Length: 107
Image (cartoon, rainbow, N blue to C red):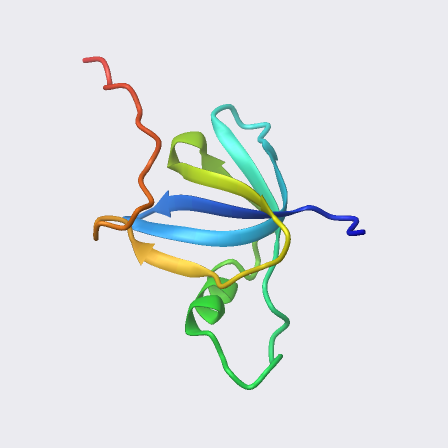
């Protein structure tokens, strides 16, 4: 039996849809944000095939202890059994993943 839960977090950032794995997801102390911590990556140098997406994400988040993501940027949080492939997709290219609908802003 595992001690830590594993979460797949899908969120939007700068027109891209990111999928990361983390062991900690909770409400942030910052109002309107969700805290995502303990990001999970494959150990560097494991295996012969290098995943360029995973390397890019590892480099982008290498010094990150906790992400504080705006709630409206989060598309989905799933509790999963095992880690899958990480991905970065263009959010505007017709993928199945869409942001949670937000009410129109008042003027």
